[in-house]
Length: 96
Image (tube, rainbow, N blue to C red; front, side, top):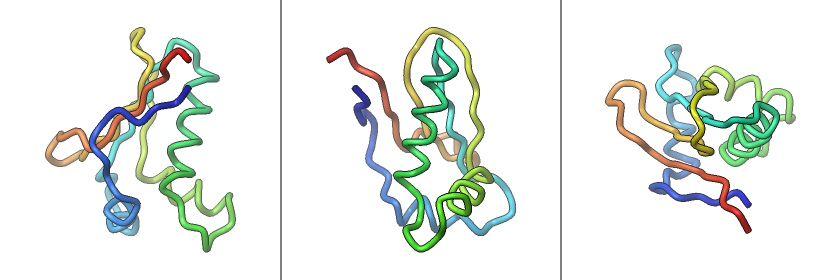
């Protein structure tokens, strides 16, 4: 089950930076299973997406903000501020 385990960044805070040229946020998806990692990435990106855009446009604009890395054995996703390096939010898969 996907569980939000970190600080709660709001959708509005995330969106504020969307139109800036550089990637201010990085999303590290850390999973053994790449397919599961992609599924998690999509869920998180959908969480932060606008309702006014088509799904394809939403994902395209959010792709500018996130970078996905697969490494290690920890099954979680961490969203952090690229400038300060501070962790903004975290999601983990927890056994039901």
